[in-house]
Length: 318
Image (cartoon, rainbow, N blue to C red):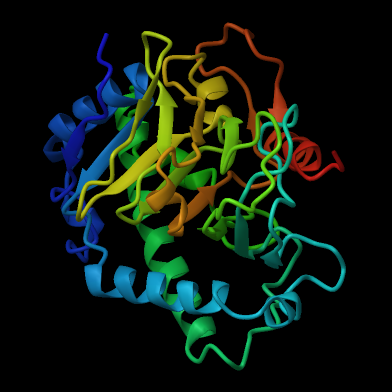
């Protein structure tokens, strides 16, 4: 089995093609075959020629770094007043491996999980709200196209089937989440607990994740041979992986691969920050996830119940 993450050319169905209906299913056969091979073995892939402008991506990273390097008192004003998921989440608040201490990162969440996207935007970072809205719109469009290809690659005759499970995407009934993640410098004075990582070992919850990395690296996945392997940043690409719900739907034909972000092991690297941006895609709340092959290997569960329970475990106190 393959241990490396393949790079797949998405030009046949990228956002540079304005009319997706002009592309036939047969024109996507090779692309669907390549995607299936990647997601059924490694569980991760890179896509290139995806159609999201690099200038927009670079600007989004710049704006987020400006925000995360603000004073703590400024960032705190952007926390959800109700304790919800929107807005700023402080350092080490999240534990993606619930058996370990909090992750050594901060985040800013733009999500409909709690209802309308109501965020207190910092006046000290002009253009931040508009940048999030644009990035969310473009990455959402791309994610739905990737789901179209996955529909074909798992043998569904209608490429819209998975797309139709996300009809309310971006509303409270289908809570897509755009997360900007910031891993601050770790000077020698930083107290690091046993087992603590920048991001703990986990699989994603929903159907699909799009990940945009900076050049720093640190992301690792469990390869088919059971060893952790780095997912090295590749310029101009987006990392794509699936989550638990799609693995359950396909009865393990596609793999929701465990991954993590490790701590730098070189003092010079510890002195720098790391950034990434992820779009997490979940089906509409009422969609029942059950094995397409009728095997009943996994008990049917609604998207809402599964994602809710995973989030509760992630944010429970240590």
